[in-house]
Length: 435
Image 1 (cartoon, one colour):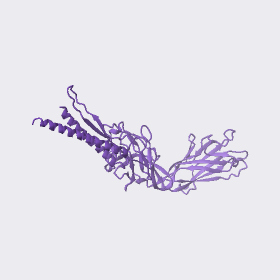
Image 2 (cartoon, helix red, strand yellow; image 1 turned 60 degrees about the vertical axis):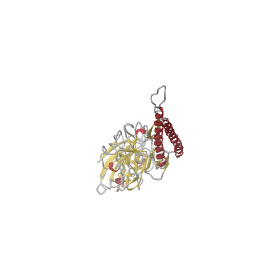
Image 3 (cartoon, rainbow, N blue to C red; image 1 turned 135 degrees about the horizontal axis):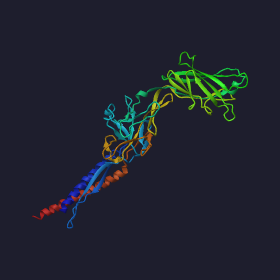
Image 4 (tube, one colour; image 1 turned 30 degrees about the vertical axis):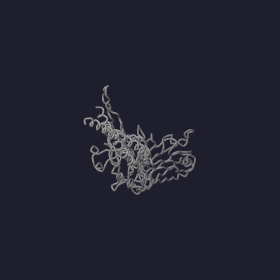
């Protein structure tokens, strides 16, 4: 009977608008919640097969979902570990139970933003209990081969083990000039000494001394030098740990450049890289002397001895001052010595259907059958956006729009209630016909 279908349609309208009111209430309540994704009520009509003699109301149905694909505006903060995805994508996080769990048993969640801080154990977490996950970087700052289709390679981001750091020296570049006049037959033969401070694997300062002795010929110019290398970390520092002989060209186009270099006595020379390798107590150190015929490294020109461009890596012991996350998702530790070291890379996750993710508490989401499979991208590559440090994502709720929807929902609910009331009066009138 069509009058009964009208009652059903009115009741369905009441239920549907009640659901819409619930989403609006959630949105307004979370208008100041960082990273909140707006709830949406999507109405769709229902149709009953009609007969020509009467019309039956099908009513309405409602589907609710989180508009996860929509992003709120970013707001700048003063905390270096406040991070947000500046567009599409979500960060991987876990709960406290996932800290010590196997990767295959860990609850993997996703969140668009977070105000992270280091807890008593050094784990980066939010006040709501989300622990940041990332790929651990090696000593060279790279993460190597990792699983991108699952969280198998993800580990909790922990900075406790990096409170103090010794960065040993592994590379020394010699940008120096040797005086050409010293290799003339009129030269005195006095050596030139070049002390270079470096740092061992315990952060101690050591000194590597290179002693350049010109070869003085009987006549003319030799353009050749013998170089002995001494190390304060090896014995008493007076014994040579290596040496090399170098000669320079005096041709028109290649004058002053290295013509030949031979390393002996514990040192070896690689002509392709221009490096002289030394085996020091704390590890190998490469000294860049220059390639054969190259324009950088050691030169011999008619100018004074000039060690003006000697560069080395490494740093003394430094304590951790802060951590920062750059736009590519690399978490770097900044030490008191000014040295920076990459500890982790924070990936950005993406799924084919963002709105199909399962919503969890505290602005977190989980992969579901509707969302499709997770893929972890490097920030700023593929479909995902870069990481914004010192930033948080505000709620995606627009208060003005929600209040407008609230008024519309109230009117729609009242109208559906009027339908139910009218149907009730009509049925009462029908009942009265029997009297």
